[in-house]
Amino acid sequence: MRHQKAGRKLGRNSSHRKAMFRNMVTSLIDLGGIITTDAKAKELRRVADRMITLGKKQTVAARRQARRFVRTDSALARLFNDVAPRFMQREGGYTRIIKLGRRKGDNAALSRIEFTEQAATPESTGD
Image (cartoon, rainbow, N blue to C red):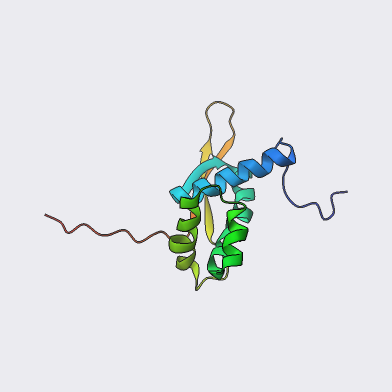
């Protein structure tokens, strides 16, 4: 029985899985959204939401905890300065998963994972 066994193995050992999610959450913070398989997106949502929660705390301890997981300094700065402040009034559900269909090569279900609150883009002044 699988009682109390949360999470998917995704055909990888634990160190490979951890490295993959570290890379994916860094890319998600840098790009604002990534395309991956359904199963990976559902697992990434758990990790990304934890990073946003750390970013909302805005403390040195939270920054150090996030630094252990986020790979680049630019992504860490973006997390604490741009991404997390957008979610200060929100209690959870920082990401959304949009199903895209099937991949041509292996028929894997693809999804796009992105942040629910998109960054404000400056509107063009128009000519």
